[in-house]
Image 1 (cartoon, one colour):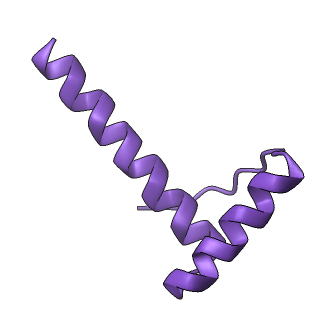
Image 2 (cartoon, rainbow, N blue to C red):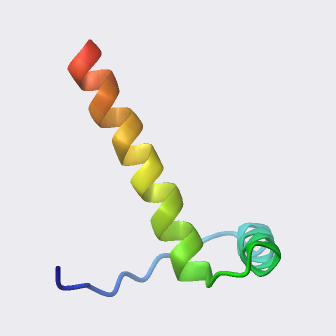
Length: 51
């Protein structure tokens, strides 16, 4: 799958929290955000299937 770059603006505090959490988990900020969005999209998909 080809990746696309996505630029988003977030509050400074979100950036700090994501950066800190990614460091604790030993992953990049991009990987953490991709993982979180994937989890969200899976939940939405399941909710639509069940609903």
